[in-house]
Length: 288
Length: 219
Image (tube, rainbow over all chains, first blue to last red; front, side):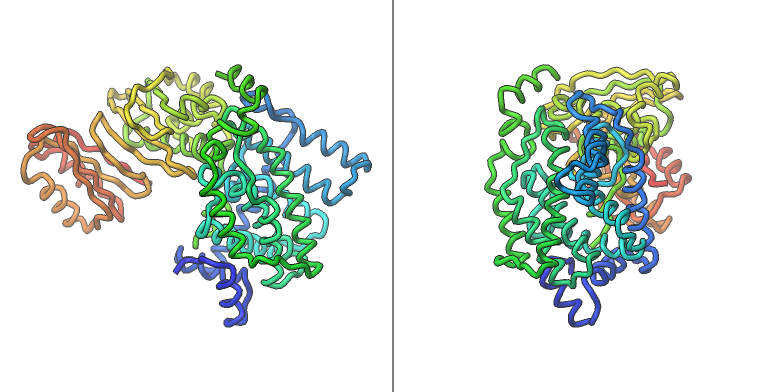
């Protein structure tokens, strides 16, 4: 039986006296017929690929349309100047999310998590946390299991595709995964992890997918930063003991339902919202 | 669950369907051709045609045709690579009816003279589907070793092919039959749980009524 609910994961962990990430690891091993070590090694490789992608960014790349590129560099310079309001940690998270999303738009090598369009969110919080608090790779891999478990439940109950559920399904899902992973790294228990995911996803419900000219560039790159910062905020709230009035699985269901009701214009067709503004349309025409 | 379905794959951006899936289509098409590509017409359709340039769909398909995987950092420079290898590439628009919005028709000529037309679609999340080979419906995913036999539409061909597989202890995961008309050209698409030995393929090629044998190996 595949994983269908966050509550079930927590209950199973409680019964077996294990934890959220271990339940996900067991499921992965069962499905693939691999050992825990092999499963963890594969996930660690994904983390290394994320770090490589982050390190390879030079800021000189531009997307095929010319709309995207170089903003990660601007953000780094400003954060390093010490003048930014959000402070060093959140500044770093923002910058890394923009860098990764720009790399994706510029045909760089990235890790889809859960999708290519939202590839900046999870690495931004994990690498920033790693550089700041050095939790060790074992702990980081465990947090990746947490993120994968949350993503799996969202995928099973709702969707992680912009074409079926709008941006809430991509950036929203990535943000929920990142929030859960961060809460885990901060020492949160299974319930806190799920609360962080729920708080993050709730904040992005209803977000449409309206990319200019149908390309994974505008507004996708900047929304990666929003998803990543939102994850930090949600993890902090959950760690403070704040809970979501609507239970986490029900929040995910609400996202799925909202996505189903979303007009096709707002589901990655490039025909509504920002894509349909006079400027959006003008850009689309110049690219044809 | 498979954790790598959620965290992964490693790929060259920007789009799993328009870039990673496109690269996978090119890669599969080259395997189906069975040799290096000398000339190819890349005919795009639907969203591939409308947004393909911005997504690098053109470069991803050519990269795949050169044998590069969807995570290969050389994908953005595939057109230059193709030129270096004297692969002649032309792009155009495919005239298709009721095709999947992310479709491409590839007309290939191999370095040793093999010819093949492949129609394929990128159906989301990097997953692809081969839809037609040489104008005949031939649907499969490329996730299994796949045996494709084009034959005259006569009785007995399926028995001949499946008995060969049985004698080689190859289990069939999925099997589909198509034909253009009664007594015309028929095709069987057999997805297998393990690889089909080369001599088995050679044996089928020698059977009367068999027009073409194409094999998609995962190796």
